[in-house]
Each structure stands twice: as structure tokens, then as C-alpha cells.
Image (cartoon, rainbow, N blue to C red; front, side):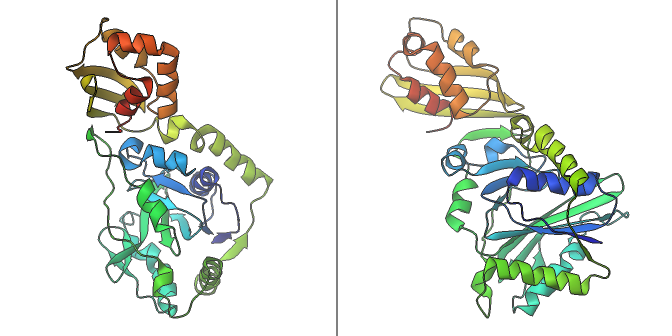
Length: 332
């Protein structure tokens, strides 16, 4: 088995590396890695439903969709990720006991009694320190997980907190649970770098024939292609979201305005505007102007500004561009 040595912290590249290890390499491999601030969503999840879009933009939190299923997880430099890729044998999918065993064993050497809990979590004293996910591709299985060591809990809570909205989605929802950092349970203090180095040394000592490996030029070229073609693209990270229906309603000075949106592949597929407001023009012109747009604040606001305040007011008298954009995005 190869132990990948790579100090990259770019979220889209790190998720691409996992994909490359699964689809572009033949050897058994493992890797320890860290990301700058990011929300990593499961392959079958709806990005809109999982995160606070405004928070992640304001705090420069990247949103990346991974290949495996499961729920959304928060990454920052206080979180260590681990990945194993190995030949797949029938019955091993969802075998979280096997792949988390060396992680739990290492934690116990530090006095942290981690246990496998529920479907795919590691917990300490009933609180979550690790989420795990798996996927299979052409006879190979990839298992990857998080280890919350000293993550910013406020950023985690803010990013993984979608706005309250009436939403019907076909995506897979995350299960929220109490979380804790490993650092709070250590008998002796240590830095995240020391923790990661200790885990690496433990794996090298306890996994037979584990050999350090540094990516070569051909490896980097394959990873670059995956970043460019998939993991740095809006179409994969947001457009891949399952279809959903959303309703937002708010009372303005002009009356109650309700927006019912149908989203398909991250774009507005249909929009119906309802309420007791007045306007001199039919609202259908406003609805049609927004269909087909990406469902993100910047895109919607640009379209409304291009349409113009006068045209908006003709359809909904007394509402501003900013107010209507906020309604569509769930500022209710």
C-alpha cells in the first residue's frame, strides 16, 4: 500500500485527488490531508438544502461535491481527513468497522476512546468527531472520513445551516448531531500538525508494507484534468443537485409576496409569483425573465438589475430589486 505524501490544502484539488486515487491508480493507497474552509457535500445531496449560501460566500467557504454519498461535512485546517482505496470484495461496502479501525486504535494511544456509532460516525462520549463515506468504482472501494481536531465550531455551524424555507427535495439530507473536537479530549495537548504526524507514523508502523509515495508529473496531470473537468465546476458542485421545489413568502409594504420556485440541476426551471400586491403589468414577464438562471444571489441580482427597477415595479408595485432578490433567495 502507498501512503500519499501531499501538502495541498485546496478543496477542489483534494477531492480530485481522492477521485484520482480511486479511478486513476491501480495500487492500494491511503492519504492524510487537510482542506482550507470548505463544505463537502455528498454526491446525492441538494447543495441549496445543505448550506447557508450567503454564509459560505461571505466567509469564503468553498462548496465541493464529492464522489461518495452520505451527508455534508465541514472542513478547515483544524480537521484532518483520511482516505483509503483498496480492492473491493462483496460485502465490504458499508463496512466502516474495517476502515476506521486503525484510526480508532491511534486515538486510543492518546487516551481518546473513540467508538463507531450509528451508520458511519466516530464518537467520543456520545459526540461526533468523525463522519465517513464510501463509494465503489470498477472493483475498487474508497473510504474517506473526517477527524475534527480543532475545527472552528462557529464556522461549521454557520455553513451547515440552511435558511428556513419550505422545500421539497429529492436529495439526501444530512443528519445533524452534536459534535466535539478531539483536542478537547486529549490527556496531553498537541497541535493539529503533531496529531497528523503521529497518525501518519502510526499507520506506517502498523500497516504492513505501507510505503510513502509522492505524486509524479503524470499523476499531477491526471489530477489537474479532474479539477478542471469536474471538481472546480459549478455544474458539478451545484448543478448536479437533485431537483427540488422551494417556497418563500414575506410581507412587504406593498403587500404579501410569495415566490414558488422549481429548481432543476441548480437552475430556476419554473417560477410562480403570488400575493396580494398590485402591478400595472402581468407578473408573467418577470417570471419568464428569471427562468433558466443559476440559483445563486449574484446571478439573480444581476438579472434583476438588468431588467431594471422600473420594470420590476411595473409587475410588483412598491418592492425594490434588493427586496425581491432577497425573497427569492430566502431572506424571510
